[in-house]
Image (cartoon, rainbow, N blue to C red; front, side, top):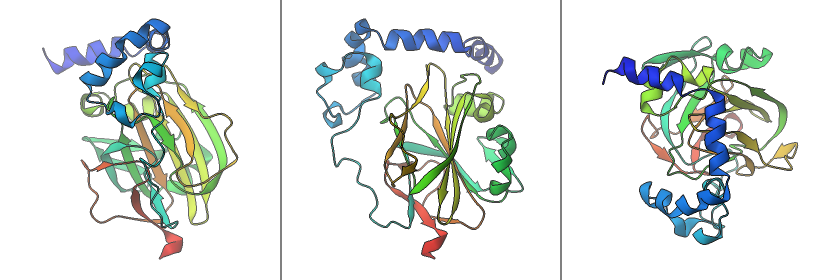
Length: 263
């Protein structure tokens, strides 16, 4: 089948109501019967989960599972920005005059990504990471740095897939999909944590209660299916690790680079 046909199918299945229907099933009691098969299909390490697999009441309950304490240590150097998620880096680099260039062959504007927020100006020449979570990954999202929450915004949108096909063949999915944006103030500068919904995501949820100030590695939110986090950093506030590149796998709590105050 042609890519145009697959694109058409994806367009038809990107409606929020269909995603919500899928989410409703994933939260139902009957869905718990599918947990062992789901875990086996995606190679999920059930022994890492906080609870025994039989204790989860639904597929969604298992998907949003916490891990056993200590499995995701936070880098001990407080000056380092850490990954908020377990993920594959599908894009990273400097932001050029408000443009994120060449994410799977497509360019994005910060203005679109941040829903034309007045804060867009802070990131025009900063740095970005695109972090993709597969269904295999741990799906809780943590704070990448210490800081207080300046602002939150929910941006309604589509639920296109954010996997390899979606990023490469669908038009600018990161700025068209539903997003939950959190702006954090760190001593070295502002950080935007953009949580992007995806196909079959019924919702992106903040943890409750959500504090006004966060420590590095503290829980911030969670996805109810595989998706993507885009991190944006202000100009001259951050230096990335030299060995990271597109395709690198990172774990939550692993250092992504150094904040300016450490230089």
